[in-house]
Length: 149
Image (cartoon, rainbow, N blue to C red; front, side):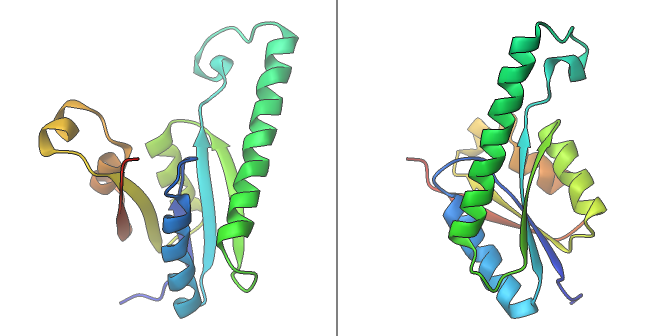
């Protein structure tokens, strides 16, 4: 087994984030690894080919992103111990592509994601970020089942 030095945890803002970070913390302690907590925000409309719109809309979106990043930093500090080397990153883009690019850029050895407990038929009919990551990731992945609440 290759040593684990960098762990990327892909999170969204749901109740399961503590559970995902709990797994990451345990592994980080065991392997003395750094934990990268990554949340992918939706891209700005002008990023995907639309006109940017009035300044007040761009200002509102920028404040939204700053608030999301503050929340991500707070979650990271709350659920990962002080002795864990950690960093919270908020990145805009397409979720699967962005997570995989960051994992590569950060030289991550393990990707941790939550996966919703749905039926096989439900997963066939609905696109699942976790399933797409499993199919496309080139590094080991730990998929944690998330209870729906």
